[in-house]
Structures are given as structure tokens and as C-alpha cells.
Image 1 (tube, rainbow, N blue to C red):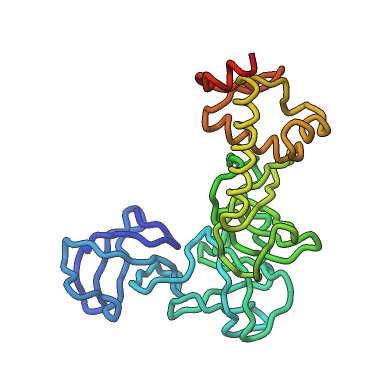
Image 2: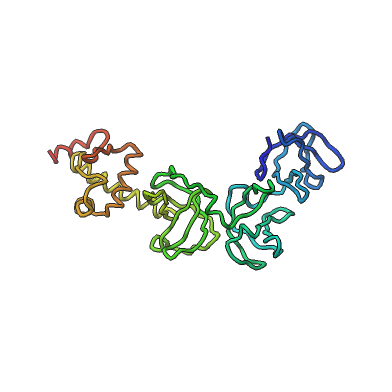
Length: 289
């Protein structure tokens, strides 16, 4: 079945004067206008198209590729404004994308850019943009792990740093102290999960720096653990002062490090401490004994 607001690979059912009709499954036949027909397209073959509704609410297909699909965020330019309807955004198709007044997060002017999510409007079944997308993000506790690589969209500035959207689904924050280069609203960058808070919110790191930092801390824990015979009485509830004295890092960094090592199955974490998985180096283990 064809998905509205997505790129689809659809079968060509028949040819007519207006263009080609494609098999849209339960949506019925969908017209691909003649001006969008690719070279070599024949009845029975397949064609990759984007499906949306036109101004008359008919499903149509196009081989033009929009800058963003339904459920995704993008930083789009304002093409025009209708005070009674909303704002029209350029998104790579002939027909501009509507940002309705009720979905706006503040005033804009022609030529401005705005971060929006493309959604399927419950009222009209048409694709629209929403600048008030926070309410559309996934509020369930995320299933990421610390150090995991993710795609980030810079959504807005914050007194603490920048608010970002993780994988088009979850909210996150990167602190000013974690930013080591230019960062602007609308940027799409790769980052890493730095920490997962108890309330499910995400602290983030940009580029490889955050990932390397967690890796370095994990290596440090492994070195101390190996040198001490493969077993140490430190865990999530240990005092920060103890962690700093033994490992030379903050308790937060320690928790990130042992979380990474646990997921990589290099250590076992129990209520009384951490234990190395596998044999300890003979000489180091003997030395500690």
C-alpha cells in the first residue's frame, strides 16, 4: 500500500493521457502526471515516487524528491505568507508546504527559515508542517544506550546550550561546555548519547569527542580493574569521593564507563561491585595476590 508523505516503489497499472496510473493498494490508483514520467517507464514496471494530496484532495505522485518526509524534521525557507491561512515553505516540490497558523511557534517573514516537522493533518489528511513539534515527539522513555551514535537536529537555543531532536523522535540537550565548534539552529549533525537522565531526557555530545571520552573512561576503568585482580567494590551507589580517588574521574563518568563495559559484556555489575568477565592477565593477577 502506498504511504502518504513517503517515497514509495509502486507498480505502473496503466497509461493514459494525463500520465501513468500507479497501484496504490487500498488507496486505489494514483496518478503520476506526464511531466514526471521517467524515461523507460512501462506498464507493469515499477517507479519510485513521493505520494501526497493535491489542492483538490486527490492523491498524486511525483518523481520530485522533497527535502523531508512525514515524521521528519527540516529547516525550511519561508516562500510566502497568507495571514488567514499560514506560511508556505519551500520543500523541493512544485507545491509549497503549508505551515498553518495553529502550528506556528512565533512570527516569521518571507526568506526566514524555520525548523518544522512534516505531519499528516488529522483534520484534512493532508501533509502540513508543524513548528510546535515538541508535542509530537515520542515521550516514552528512550531505549538508547550511552555512547550510541545518533542523528541530531538543532531545534533551538537554550540558556544551557542547544535543544536538539534525536533521530526525529526524542528531545535532548547539549551544554555549552560540550560545544567545541560552530553550531546553528537547523544544523543536522551526528552526535552521541552522553547520558540518559532518570526522567528520560537525553544529554548529548557532538561528533566523535563525546564517544571518545566515554571510551577513554571505559579503558581507564578496565585498566584499574585488571590491575586490581578483576574485582572491585565500586558501583552506581558508591560515593563520588571514592570513585574519584580510585579511578580519577567523576561518578557520572564512571557510571557511563561501566555502563558501556557492561553492554560490551566486558564486566559484570552487581550490588557489591564490578567484576571483569574472562581471565585476568596472569602477571597482573598474581601481582595483586
